[in-house]
Amino acid sequence: MTEYRWNQSELAAGYDAGAMLVHPCYVQVQDAILAEMGCAGAADGLVVDLGGGSGRLVERVLDRWPDTTALIIDQSQAFLDLAAMRLERFGDRIAFACKRLQDDWRDVVTQPAAAIVSMSAIHHLDPGEKQQCYQRCFDSLRPGGLLLNGDEVRADADDEYRGQVERWAEHMQRLIDTNAVTPAMADALRGWRKRNVEQFAEPRSSGDDCHETAATQLSYFEAAGLKNTGVAWQRELWSLLKGQRVS
Image 1: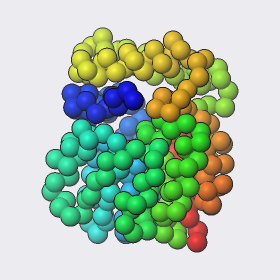
Image 2: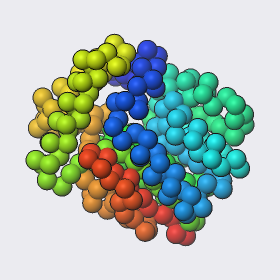
Image 3: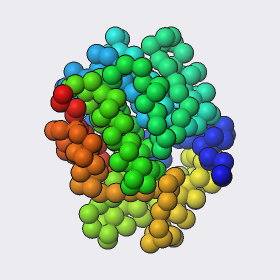
Image 4: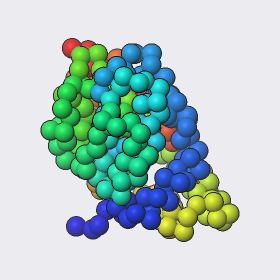
């Protein structure tokens, strides 16, 4: 099996440093997730972050809600090491699990979650893996708990989707040209452009950018048992998909 690219410490550090530059909507997606959690009262227990990386979203959750605990699940130990340093001040309010989202991670969720959140991670799962992941989310939520996935979502029309991908690639190229990201991150952005622009029409497999439409993914939510589904926020390639375990 090919080594998971984000296990490289230099690349993980480069992403952590440049995330808010690379993703034009990075802060807005986080803001939308926090707003939905606050409105639904979904931060008075355990919050699980799937693919939580270096802990930037969880840091905001724990700062905002002092009685909340959190669990970050991510397959990159390099990212989790960064998260451990960032979140050390929260003590036993934070826990970590090094697991792939493609695999069954339910055993590390030690109590029903008030919310399961994710940002820019689940799109790496192929369609079958997404369906399995969303079923695990339903199984791991308490009644009333929320699933909030802020992610890259494919537009319904291919030409609109391609335009969004190309505009993001142009944004990445400007970052590379101005040395705004580390050399390791610049290489990763070139790889993203090759996979998603130059190879736009080629099939995707698990680990690639397996973008699917909001409607398709919300149908996965509903098949897993989630209710009150919808798109809570959307801009360009990014959407916040939400669902709730009612009972």
